Image 1 (cartoon, one colour):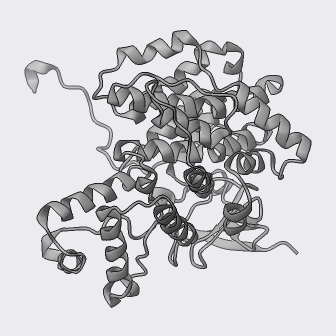
Image 2 (cartoon, rainbow, N blue to C red; image 1 turned 180 degrees about the horizontal axis):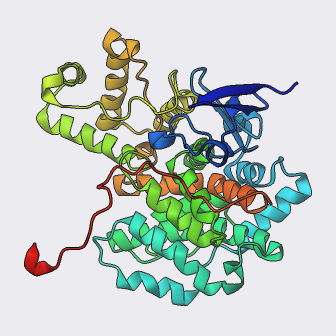
Length: 423
């Protein structure tokens, strides 16, 4: 017999079915609650609400588990590439050799953007944040591929997905070049996805540039670790915008805007700003930790703590090892990264933080030479496959309805209009 949960509303009792996930997660199905009782649930920030059933990513914050389509993030980080992981997330399985070759070919051949679109960058001031450019340019893609405006058109879905993944790297790199006043560098078909991105970011016409294989591998790893994270703010945004049958480009642009927020993808930029401030003040790691513990100072330790993970973030373990390897093999010695390590060691040895289960999260791009202003753009580049996978899962589900949360109204009761002369 299926499990149910009984609730009492006034004199009425109602048995609600319980949905059980493949990992044993249990959720009370309240879809008929209002229709049968006239009441709704109130759950600010959706802390206890599952908005959907999804087969894409499993996350257990208490145990520090993250799996894409059932495969542990540790295995993918060690053995896979970003574009292979993207295929896994979007299509539900690791590609065969033929599928992988076709996928790689398509992503390479669709990396250029229309020259008219290239000129859009001329309209932005050099002070424009790369995320502002990224979100606008992704929306603009829809004007070049009008047949993609029909989100339900199955025959165009795969090529639209390819185009978006291929072109986002180009748009991201162009947004950086615009920001620093450098000429744009076009993509090259003889480079793989991550090497091509580094080439567009860091090469200049005046000299030859060859992406460092260590940096390429590290970037692959970073993007894999960020590729999906279940129903976070930006992913939920993509799904709720897409639930209106909004095209993929516009839905992803909405996700980019959500990611921009300092409590979401923008948090990694705040970490660097915190480190710069510590250096300017000449504080040691321990002195800063002491200030954080003193609640009167109002100072926060950025980069520690996570909304979901109540144990060590599994991504942090992987990226810490990779960061150390990059620094060693590339001969980089960065005082800011040294400070970040000292802060981590000081915090993790302090009962104040250990008792609160505040552990470092993952955002380290500085070792690769990625500038601070591009951190959130890199996050978007990595998260794109997850966003696409969730949009695709939702748009192909015949039971999908347009997202429309309820509310509990707390404003004034019925009132009447007063003419201006009587106010």
